[in-house]
Length: 184
Image (cartoon, rainbow, N blue to C red; front, side, top):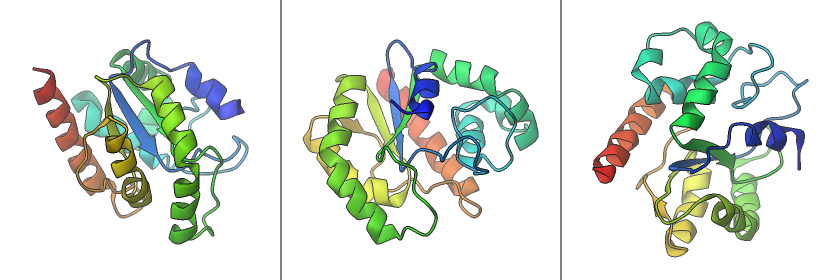
C-alpha cells in the first residue's frame, strides 16, 4: 500500500455513499503538485480538485478562498468522510504531465480489471459513482455500468484544472442534486 493510500484510508467512510473516481493519485508529498486531495499535512496552493469538490459539495465552503479551504482541510475532509464520500483513482500510479491522453486512456483500459476489483471492495449496490476527467469517463463508465454499478454522470465531468473549475463545480453540483433526489 502506498503512502498516499494509507493517508486516504484515514478518511474512508464506514459506508461509502458516493465514490468519486479521478484519474491518478498525486505524486510524492515532496513534489509540488496541484493534486494532493487527501494530504492535509500542510497548506498547498493550486489543489484544484480538493477546493472545487468541497465548494461544489458544501454551500458553506462556496465563498471561501483556496487558502482558507487549505487551512481548514482536515475539517473539510472529515466532513466529506462523515457524509459518506470517498475518492480513489482509476490508476494507482501518479502520471507525469508529459503522458499523453491516449497513453493515459490505454493505461486505464489495461487497469480496468484492477479498478473493478477495487470498486467491488469499496462499493455496494447503493453506492453512487462519479467519474472525474474525460479519459476516466470514456474508458470506465460502460464497464462499471455493465458490472452493475450506478454511475451518476452520463457525460464527462471535466477535471477542474486551470480552465474548467466553474464547469466542474456546476456539473458536480448537478450530480449531487441527482444523488439527493434519488435518495428521497
